[in-house]
Length: 269
Image (cartoon, rainbow, N blue to C red):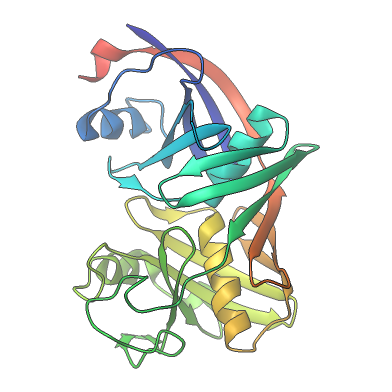
């Protein structure tokens, strides 16, 4: 069976999109997703995106990280799907329904309100998520937020000084986080600018993470470190995160189609 795919990226965070809105897609195992994600022997991607019809929205989007595990949300992928769709739409995810508006190779995504309750992250036990009395080596006193998926955010003086390739996987699987965690290290440059690096749960170091930018802006805004609208610069580029009057988060940034192709399913069984 030959399966068509669309390769896209948002600031270098890349995806293979399988569009099943008009065709039936095969069910893929975690092992098949990992094989497809291999950058030497497969397609290569940070996330695999599966689109299908929805009764509650214009479409359903399911997201698998490169390790095969399914996750609730991906901001960069949502922008990519918005650009692919080409019109305002509602997208059903396991993290909730997202509203998108594409324009000129970019898109704005209404991400909803961030959740800060310890049980909403979730954490293994009760804790104030605004300023958590914890530390891992040089990373201390993070904040946490759930913006469709869970994030912990550390504010430091220099994001480049953090060995995130070592500390990220350690924090990701810490027993405090029963569903694992995305790890963000952020440097507040000004009231309207943040630098950010992200260790993404199930994907590792990434050039960009849309939900990471949203969570970081939300935690920074909650602490009074930034204004309601802030530019978040990641290694792959810059996203704009805006808080509205109701406390919702809106993320804006580019997404690009790289190429289209097909793969033979039997080659990845």
